[in-house]
Image (cartoon, rainbow, N blue to C red; front, top):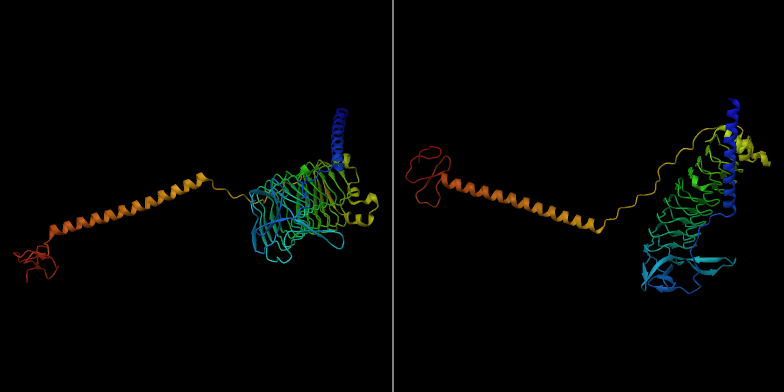
Length: 437
């Protein structure tokens, strides 16, 4: 019986090793051929921008690229068409080369200190690299549903931009796209696939929800941010180097099932990090912990013997770099509790704002018909009530004429008690019986 069990165990381990070998091969290919955000062509052929109203633009033949704004209104909306051609892209102008031989990008004029809200109209599909680079006057940007791509450094350094909702059709966010901006709220849609290197580095946002559709996040994407808790979806397969480097507010991290490889320095200089959950699919780790003085608990979804077979017996030594001569930082981890056979918790529901329902023409027609019907019903009720009152008044008048006498008849006398008009020939009131006086 024991020999059969041993054979089954060996077969199970061999099969698992073979599967892990295939996964490692896949990850190696991904490492040397990383997924990058494919940017659209941004070559404006160094043409001089044209002017339309207060907008500067490049005529690209079959479409228009907006490249600047010369006004200073508080709230601006980009045009949808210029000279009959659709506006499909937003890009900056390369205005000059500074004294350090660095290209300077501009969208707003230097004298404009008023424009705080920007609405990009429907039809725009791409915000090109450096489009609003260091434009600190921006506080609010509304992106169109038609948008599919946000380029490198597009909103980098927009320190007063506090919130952004990435539209549902966006599939890629370029490197440094929102780096060092003022984002305190980040809404990413299901359908997003690529987040570029350092895309959200240095933002003050405390929470970020990464949709399951994301398959690649570049190195240092959330480094130096104020994120407190993060769920990393399993579709990533590999976590790139320094993903959460120097996130000093980070307390908990959940690495989703499906992730097999952890790059170096993922949690380096996260002094408040307390708990990390690892998936059962994990098969390769680098030195991910350094200077984590408050780390208390590590959870593995796999059993201890499976972790030993895949990761080896010195798991903490590998994770902290002790095997690489980092004893001075590895001493923090002597009292860390390691728990096995603990599944990675599922992330909370996405906070992505619900899309407002559009009212189609049929709905508008039905609403109008309903209002007309209600109005006619009210009028009918009013007329019906008025008719009933008029009918009642007529009947009352007829009844009065039957019971008494008309005042215009000569010789009538009025009863001193009930004021009823009586016939000239009667001596007693026909109603109350009082004698005529």
